[in-house]
Length: 203
Ligand SMILES: C[S@@+](CC[C@H](N)C(=O)[O-])C[C@H]1O[C@@H](n2cnc3c(N)ncnc32)[C@H](O)[C@@H]1O
Image (cartoon, rainbow, N blue to C red; front, side, top):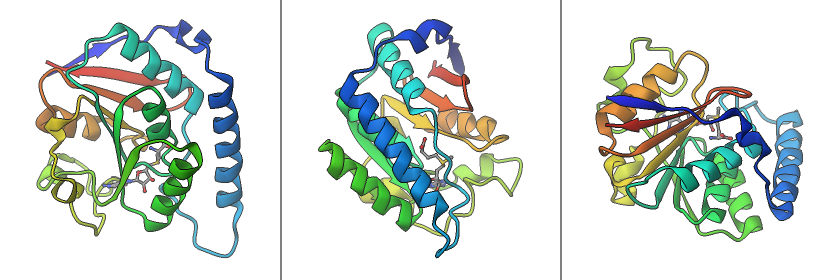
């Protein structure tokens, strides 16, 4: 079962260190330049989150909530901005991404920020998880890449915190996958849109 934890609205008043603000700003410019490129197909699955709000919510979570460990996984890491920010907050981070071109961008972020993040090419859905979806067209489904957990030698229940940015309409599916496979006590943070960051604990 998932228990909802309310993130207070004043979380957006939490200070963000200047060096982190600058990194978010330059990441935003890189993302815009990437999305404006006309000479390659658009990666429709990538949309940037509100990284400041995610950082503040994660910082608040680490300060106020019990965690079962320090391992953090970003499901679909894209430019790996959240992974890099989580590493700055002292977490042991793995980012999983199915798109090669995004994985390369994530590696640029990690090198640029000089943070110890492991980025893995693969599917964040464990084998069998697709059967939990009630709509075969959800964007998280059907990625023709290997299950990432085999290559990293860890399972979802080895992580204390999972972060995801579900496409509209697939938040229930991400919750169902987390509920089925995560460890008891683990946390799921989902960015579901501006001012809509959700936090759950598996009980
Ligand atoms: C909405 S974007 C969010 C990116 C990043 N988490 C962020 O907050 O900036 C979703 C990302 O998940 C990736 N993705 C979607 N389904 C996936 C899957 N089953 N396995 C691995 N990556 C996936 C997409 O390629 C995309 O980069």
